[in-house]
Length: 145
Image (cartoon, rainbow, N blue to C red; front, side, top):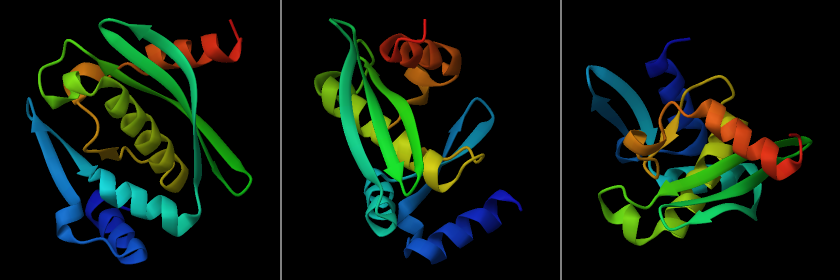
């Protein structure tokens, strides 16, 4: 299934509108994003339960916490993080941004495994391409190292 068909099915299933989707274009690449509000509506419709914590990192320039999302018998954990030195409004609300990023990543991973969906809570300049770093942080908090 191609990306447009998938997005159309997602919109139909959850009652999303065009305003809930947007395409982020950077350096010749484009990534589909959903608004944070749309991700929250999806979580409510699916009955996904989200819990926060523990805090993984709380330094002056980085905030990170573990987020757990549960949907039926499936559980997923993601790291929500914010680089405080980043430009933009997220630098003033680091914990809120870390929370939104973690929640949205976990919810999207539960409802669309294997698809690269992102929410507008993410700033791809500061967190894109850090899968290994995120896995290491998650392992550290879970005592797997």
